[in-house]
Image (cartoon, rainbow, N blue to C red; front, side, top):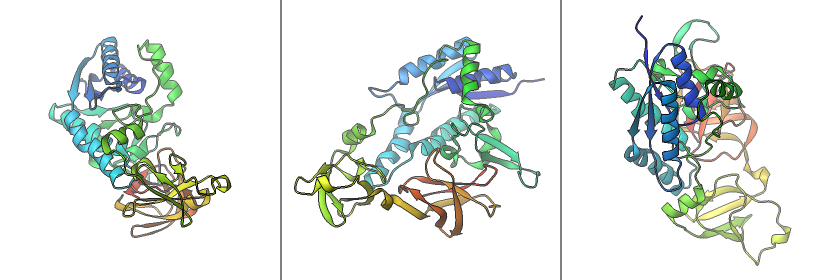
Length: 349
């Protein structure tokens, strides 16, 4: 029997390393690739690349580096900066997954004649309708480990691609992955998880924005009163606290904790208010996509690993919720799920 060939995106982290090992154990012909997307001072790219290579050597698999730094800058970094410049809150992980990992890397997998592309994402791909139990086209579904689920970040990966993608970690717990890495003696078994921007890693976003966009001082208003000044609207997101200077003439001692509730790019004004003002029970989405058969019962998630909130009504681009949600930030994704955990739609707030 001829082994299926699989291209594994290896980031140098423990998750994708264990995926490569699992597929070797399952009899696949595995080839590892490190996607070099961003390599600026302060990044861990070089160390991550070395870690991925060491794992490939340990597993005895072939390995290469794919340089997409130009494309990443033009597609992900540009989007990131443009969104902040437009007073929106971007989600670069979603664009990175769509355009780089399951865009350029997926195309490379097809071009080179591999059967599958595998990554270390925590998500599942199903092909049996959870209600009719009939076979259907592949669909995206939440991971078994709900604390690590990454389906929110993957909603823009085209459904037509899912049949050639493998996410082995969708059916396991994170604790099992660590144990497996130790059992296999992988050199990065104790490496901490990356919590930064997709393919960049740890990044001080405020410093990055100041370097790329500079500052644009403006007023901070609370209930019509000038209470302070800000350095630029791109440094703040809905629901955030602090980071602006209090006007010495305002009654700062009498102020309650204040949160960003609105940004006015035309007047360059940052509006703040009490926490209760950051809640909303409806949202407007655009660029919406839904599966052909959307169930009556829907839940929406407005940030990665955020709570699932029940939807009471869909009316065009307006989504009404059964309970208020904190900090609906324009530019973020709203991803819709059914009760089986399937991703059945999504849009941009």
